[in-house]
Image (cartoon, rainbow, N blue to C red):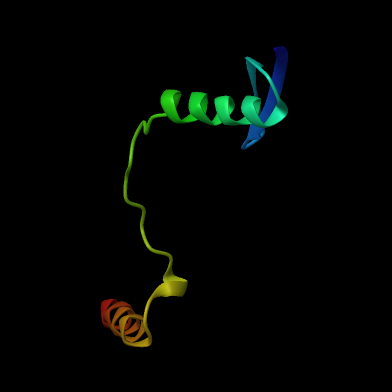
Length: 70
């Protein structure tokens, strides 16, 4: 058995996982187990859809509404 230190980075934040394993492959498998077991969702929230994804008709309606407001 050897001690392995696995480093990973997520969005600029560095993490280390230390494990004992017989090979690099086993150390990697153990690291995945740690990630799966200790990762949880904090929140899930909807975000507004950007105007780029809107259809032409939706853009026309918005344009007419803003023109009528003037």
